[in-house]
Length: 247
Image (cartoon, rainbow, N blue to C red):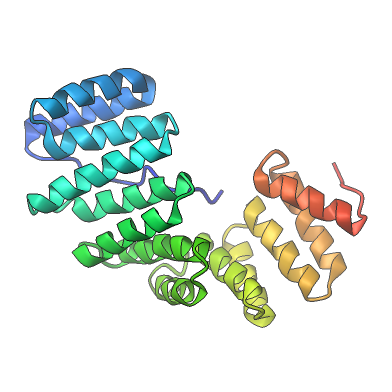
């Protein structure tokens, strides 16, 4: 299932003493986030630097406290920038994702721009960076910027179903149903059981005049994830269509 990768692979800090302490703190964040925040705060006050701030951010993520997480990631990224630390780009990306989760796409856009400026990512990682920024631009209503970023991402991560899903959604909202149909088909090929993809497939189909295809897609979304936001949206769409929801 497509999901926000807030805890994507992040480089462990060096030197080895900091690395071991960071790994222990990050592990604690998963089991006792409150204690991890306390330990990270003490470590930060005593000179823990980037590693301490990073662990604090991860603990906030574990608590789904997205704004404090974004703030901590940003602080870690700025400190990494000041020290010419190669981790800063990744930390800015995590700050952006936390800001998106907090419902602040403008703040996320700034963070994603900062990551791009650092120029530390290449290949697949760069493609994911473009994809992340496209989500912020999309949320801000910058359709042209979002399209530019999505197209750049598709060249670098063509196997990522989220890229095709976002491309299809943007095309639909821009009135380009031909591209929306093509791109959502690509997303379905790569993630056939994802409710978000099925929901969008139904949205594209209904606008294309195919009630039957829309019904099939929305029923799949309900079946695959009935309690998810996508599943519930699909159920609402089926109700408006006057279609019985199959168990």
